[in-house]
Length: 280
Image 1 (spheres, helix red, strand yellow):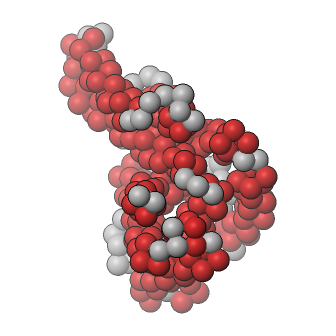
Image 2 (cartoon, helix red, strand yellow):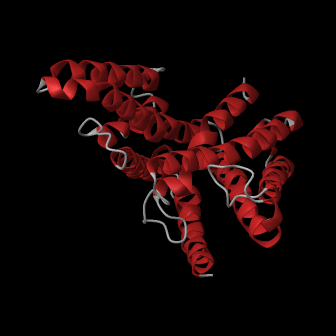
């Protein structure tokens, strides 16, 4: 009950703040929203680092900070300060730097750790940096405020419906996924359906998001219905592997930042490319 109350409190505080950032502060190509994305990228990177450290795996010093370069570069690319493909180029350069870093270890007894350090560092940059850059890239479309709102609501409607319906009606269908035994089939189905419903609502009232294309809107709802679930389960798998219950404690009733944005990160590239296809 305490966790439910905390989630409600977070909802009451978070929704007005999110509305203000998206709709009331669109200046400089949604600079405030993108700065928030950079901050969350750093926090998510720190939590990812801690997951690895809980298993005794160290990441390269400053990895979480370096992760934020990708959403920053993404924003600079959108405002045409940097050329196209700068995000991918930056990710490749970081990967090469990480690989080269292990050539200069301080002692021979640290050499066996290199494969773990490189893998953990690359994954942290990918998860909290590259995936976050796709959320930033949503501001490159026409009517970016509506696009962002559509994306967030499709994902959060899935997550919220899965939590509520799973808690109320899903007790007998739990335990089907070992990495997240408290999740239920009822919750999954409810979340999936709500993603489609929200997508259809946006197609009806804001058709410009999907270029007035019903199949694209339906495809977005179905796709994010799956990716939201898999984003949540993937992070659950990471936490179970690390032996922790939550990625952190910053978010009331939800655990850490990663616990709150895991599905957004996983879903962002899919939503971005669906809209990119629709707007060609």
